[in-house]
Length: 189
Length: 180
Image (tube, rainbow over all chains, first blue to last red; front, side, top):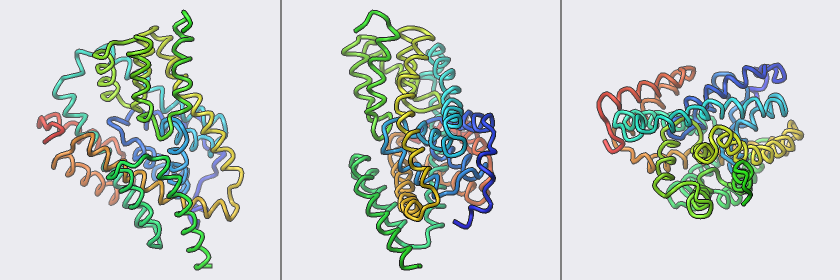
């Protein structure tokens, strides 16, 4: 983890900044694919977490109950500032969409079924998918062994192509991946 | 069910929060069953409309429950339902994150972390596949995703709002449907 030296001091991340960052993520997260926005904000833009911290946290967050991106905000907030950080991040993530979804509900007839809105949403979703593809490619690039990419492909195919349920797939895949990581480290050592 | 609508909403959604393994999608059928069949808070048609609104708005798809709460008991209902759906699972996640963070820096922690990272990458790749299936992405969607990924790989600090807004505007102006 040679990147650790370049990390800013975590306890110095202001709560307001944590809240505003997650407000931005929440308000931009149209059409799913929020993990790409969260990665960009937390790992690329703010450099609050290194890639492995973010991705391992994401795996943990997905097997716990709860909405993945909310769990991810709690994880990031907890890591940076403890319970106040978790509250700030989760609140920031949800407060924007809370008001927007209600506004859309009130304006129902003016938004739902309007072709331009549906078209815009399709475009935004496609770009959000692009953000996620960016993470996958960055992950593959950073991997120094073949084990990581193989695990990632196996997980993606099992869930995305064969529609196997996520939690059991992770519960089987994670120990195998951890064992592979252990063996590669020992070989390197 | 209690007469108090706030209490009724909390009783329905707190347990759903705690069993939503694998994300909000996993409890969507249960949310529909409770809202339409058991509590009769919305008709089948109204529920589909609320679902469409939640898909159009930003934020997690589970914000659908915010709309259910709003329909049942106005702003207070929206707030109670949102908290019921997100707070219990977040407390569990917070405890797990705290337990995990306490061992940071130990060697086994680093090994587990580096083993879990590719699992996270695989989950995001799986998300790409299923999002494309839901969005029914045609060539225009593929091209947009590829260009966005290329831009952000070449210039990582590009604000994501630029490709997102540009793609939304281009699709709306050209009238590109999800099937285009």
